[in-house]
Image 1: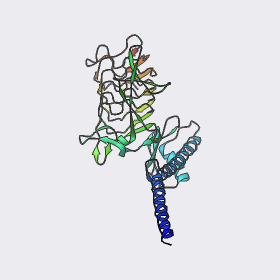
Image 2: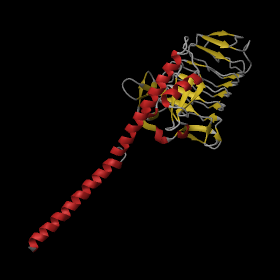
Image 3: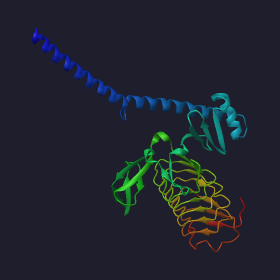
Image 4: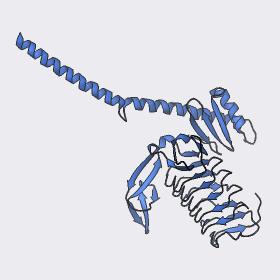
Length: 333
C-alpha cells in the first residue's frame, strides 16, 4: 500500500506540474505581444475602422450625388453622416478636403479631393517640445530599420526591397516609415495638450516612405529644414494659412508631389525647398514672399507664376531652374 501511495503521489505531483506548464503556456499565448487577446483587440479595432471608413465613403457618395457639379460642403457631409452613423456621433471639419472624427472611438479619417477616405494619425501621438515645435512621431508608431547602402551611379541608396529604393545619407542608413495600420495620411495639429504648436522641427518626418497626404492645421508658422525630404510617395500637402517660413530642402526628393498651394502671408522659402520635385509643373508664389534661397525651385517647373511684378531683392539669383522654367510676373491668383 505504501508503494502504491508513493507512486500515486508522484503521479499527482507530475500532473500538477504539467497543468501549471500548460496554464503558463496558455496565459502567455493570451497575453504576450502577439497573443490571442492582442490579436482579438486588433481584429476588433480593424473591424470598427473598416465600418467607419465605409460609413464615410457612403456619406461622401450621398453628399456628392445631390449636386450636379459634384461639389459639396462639410455641412452636407455632416448631414449624411448624421443620417447613417447617428446625430452627434461624428464631427466634420475642413473645406475642399475634410476630416471626419468619430467621437466615440476617436478615430479620424481624411477625405481627399478625389474622395478617397484615408485613416489618419491622431494628434496625441506626436513628439513635441515645450517651445512649441513638433519633433516627430512617438517611437511606438515608427519602425526603425538599419539598411546597408549600395552604390548605384555613384549615389548611395538604401535598398528596402527589389521595387523601392530610398536615398540614404550614409551606410548603414536609418530608414523610418509609418506602420501600415495607422494609415498614410498625417494631420499635424497646431495645439497639443494645451501647448500651442508654432512650428515643425528639422527632419521631423523625413524618409517616411508610405506617407501620401499631409494636412498642417492653421496656427503653425514655420516648417523646418528637410521636414519631408525623401518622402517618396507624398502626393498632396495642405499648408496652413498662418505659415510664414518654409525651411531648406523641405520637399526635396518628394518625387510624387503633384501640387501645392503656397499661402498668402508666406515670407520665406529656403534653399532647395522644391528640389527634384518632378511631378510638379506649375506653382504660384504669393506677392508676400520676400526671400527665396538658392535653387529653391530647381526642378523642371514649366511655369512659375509670381504675384510680384518684378523679382524682389531678397530672391537668390539662381532661385529657379532657368533651363526649364517660364516665369510670369504680376499674376493674381
